[in-house]
Length: 110
Length: 119
Image (cartoon, rainbow over all chains, first blue to last red; front, side, top):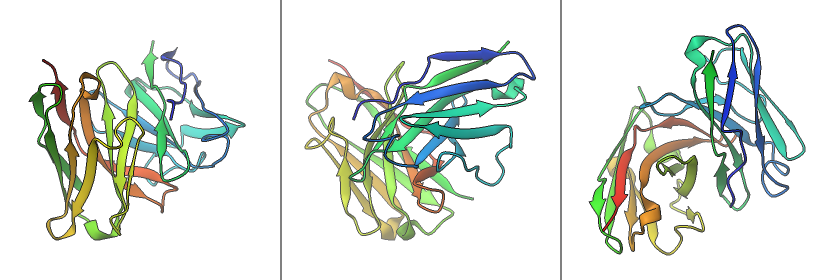
């Protein structure tokens, strides 16, 4: 149950697109299309952004999109806005009713 | 409105115990699997444990044998008994509602309760 690997930080200018990677293994990301992404503002509860690799819950901006290739999932934020500054976490089902989260990525809008 | 409110955190010494609670409202508690997730200072989120609607329980290797998750559907409450606490258990503990409707994800989270293990 090793944490999924994410870059510690990613930054971009307003309007740009950024991508956050989430690398796991054949035991988690590579085996299941059950990757989700969460946004966490300081002092707030995490917010679900993406589920099942690519799907957005109702109410989540279409500027957020997800993808997966092999053992690596990715979250792309398009048209970066100041309000997107937050910490982002990926999560994957890891079999046997267990889950594994990513190490987290801090997004900074320059 | 769905709400999850954790309580029970505090500062304890290594080897001591603590019981966390999570009160749920705004949804039919019985119908959802519930999870605990924690975040240690400066670290990422870590899945800790879950309990199904039928009270089957599952644990991360790091806590198995020391933590016990349970639920009381009559009280719409989730619990986590933390025994034999270690310094590395220091973290904010969140309860989260699991949804299979949204592909094995966590759609609602509480604000968290801080557990500090220090001598």
